[in-house]
Every structure is written in structure tokens, then in C-alpha cells.
Length: 461
Ligand code: SAM
Ligand code: SF4
Image (cartoon, rainbow, N blue to C red; front, side, top):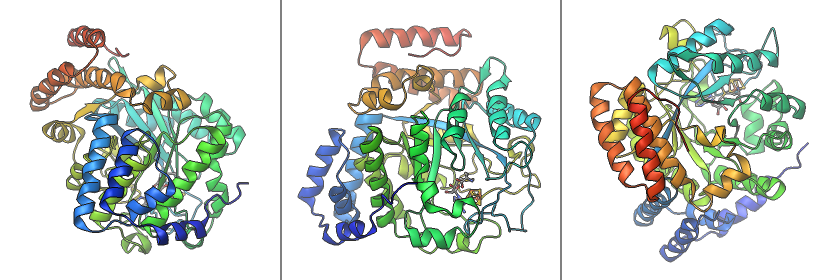
């Protein structure tokens, strides 16, 4: 069992002593642009910023770091909820065991295949598989079968090329079996790093064990899963504490495994059926604070991708992109069976802020000048864990990511896009192509784009 790596006293002292001033923000940005993770003291100082001028400076700096490291790309995925059954009692979630206000469903493998096909038909290539923590008949084998089923789904020449999972903590042996299924990222959010709040929010079931959850990423790494995502459910406790605790978690992982998280997620609590806490979160995070969190994470952990879901409205998402978001879900349903049957009888986990179909989100992204990417290349070429970090840290990944974004976006334009997206998308691709610095890579991309136009698929570098 993990010793408590979250030193609450240290966090309190850091916040007390932090003094942000303009000159300091400048120094911190320079360090971040050098792709170095910030120290806890530096992150604490950024968290203390609240005058509008320095805040505006912070936002501008986060945008600069995002542009430098990630460019204009936004990687896109869709969540697939396979079950809303759960043995836990998380006070903020509609799936909590004792919640009688929702209808439950565990999708069969046929239904999972149908859902995957429906997701494919919208143009997605990446899925995040999500489930409550209860697999009644087959146990964990149900999830492993589901992963196989998703990978077996087809829409013409297209298939899901990368499946990430958001699942309850496992034991090392189980993580080893999970790795064998061919997942991309294993995601697990601590929800809150504040022990007392954690106990208050997780009333029963295996998830009520704070330390078992905190230790789970260590176990995943020990089992050989080198691609993990972590996160906080914002709204449960003071966001300043949570961000510093997240940094302590990262520091611990880097020290012990030489590797940090591949992604960080920033869910904010949304209203969930039957959950009073979700209607009135104890520490609500305002829109400005939310943007500040994203900007600070962008500067603090430059090498990690930041994920934003459809919990947020289109308007908030537009603002957040410029602050450092690198991955987004789009066209999401959080009710099991929701892609095949729309608003069916089964309940979703929480209400969504962005209900737009994928094509509309893509149009919006293009209008803002971003390049939608369905790339899965690093994972398939084995560029994960330390190999990925080595590329990501010195900003090299941009040289691979831009061509791959253009190639996968071209596939989307050919196979799934509406005429108006095709039109704006083609312009985005031409502009992106001209921005590839290396002439050989540019040539490869140009030739591959031409091949895709005549029916070739799945070209990447
Ligand atoms: N059941 C597993 C677990 O809790 O780790 C995995 C999936 S859970 C369905 C995914 C995430 O949804 C949780 O980790 C939590 O952060 C988030 N979530 C739960 N209730 C929410 C709410 N009301 N609003 C926003 N996000 C919520
Ligand atoms: Fe279950 Fe996860 Fe919801 Fe908690 S957050 S009730 S573990 S589905």
C-alpha cells in the first residue's frame, strides 16, 4: 500500500508562502517554454494569481507554451459507456449503487459492437471505454471481452485504432492482463486528493479506500502499463490544493518510475440524476478559475496532454483550447447504448454541456484555426511511455504530430465530413502542409494525402 505521498501540511505551507508577481510569471514561462516541469513552489505562486492583469499574462503564456509544444492540433475521441452498474457510493455520481432514480444497463458484446460501429460511422478512430465498477457475470473478463469487441468493429475500411480505458483500480496481475488486451491509455482520476473530503464523498464500496486508489497508478506502471492518465474531479475541494496535490502525485511517479502521466483530465462536477452533491458541489469552480487551472497545468507539466470533455459547453471549450487543451471528446453519449438508440431508457453519468454532433464540433474547431486530429500513430508504433516523453519533452513530437493530424483529418474529410466541413477542412490541410518544416516529411505527407484522396487509408509516420 502506498504511503501517503500527498503531504497536506506541505501544500498548505506552499500556498501560504507563495507570492506571485509579474517578473516571476515571466521567469516561470521561460522555464515552461524550455519544456521543464515546474517546481511545486512555482506552481503554488501561479495558483495565487488573481489580479486580472497577471491572470491575462498567465493565459497568454499558457497559449504560447501550447503553440510551441502542441501546435494547433486537437486530438479527438468519443467515450463509450458499456455499463452503468456500480458497487460504489460516490456521492456525486448518478451510477452510485443506492441510487434508485436511474435505469441500469450492462451492454452485451453485440450491443458494444453496435455502439462501436455507430461511433465509427461518425468518423471517430479513438474510443475511451468507461464503466461503473461492477461486472456481474464474467467479472473483469467482461471488460476484456468488450475491448476485443470494440477493436473488432468495422465501418467499411475503418476501425477503432486506439482504445483508452477509464476503469476502477486493479491489482498488478489484473493490470498485466489489461495491458495484453492492447489498450492505449489507462485513466484513473483520484477525484479529490484531500483525504477527509475523499472519505466524505465516497461512502461505501472498494472506491472508499483512498490509498488503494492513490496507489493504483504505481501498480499500473509496475505491471508494465506505461501510458496513464490522471485527473481531479473539480468541485469537491479547493482547486489550489488539488492542483498542488496532483503535482505531488506526478513528482512521486517521476521519481519512482522516471515517467509522468501521458494525460491529465480536468472534469468539473456536472448535475447527475439522484445526486445532491452534484447539484451543489461543495467547492464550485468558476469559469475563470477553471481556465486558470488549465493554464497552470499547461505551464506546470508541459509534456502532458490535457483532456477536456463534453461536460463543458461549446463556449467554454473554445476558450479552453487556447489555454492548453490538447485532446477533446466530441459527439459524446454517457448513457449505455446512447449511440445506437439516442436518448434511450438508460441513464447517463451526468448531464453534458456540449451536445453537438462530431461534424459540427469539427467545423467549429476549423473555423478557429485548429487542426482536428484522429492520429493514433505513437501508440501503434510503440512510441509510448519513456519513448514518447523523450519526444514530447524537447517538443519534437510536433514534427510527427502535424503530418499525422493532416493525414487522419484528410481521411475524415473523404469518408465522413459534411460538404461545409470538407470545404473548410481542405483549406486547413493546405495551410498545415505548408507549415511542415522538414521538406522530406512535407513531401511524404503530400504524397500520402494524394493516396488517401484515391482510397488509401491508415498512412502515418
Ligand atoms: N467508475 C470508474 C471510476 O469511478 O473510476 C470509472 C469511470 S467513472 C464512470 C469516470 C469519471 O467520471 C469519474 O472518475 C469521475 O471523475 C467522473 N464523474 C463522476 N460523476 C461526475 C459528475 N457528476 N460530473 C462530472 N464528472 C463525474
Ligand atoms: Fe461508480 Fe465511478 Fe460513479 Fe463512483 S464515479 S459511482 S465508482 S461509476
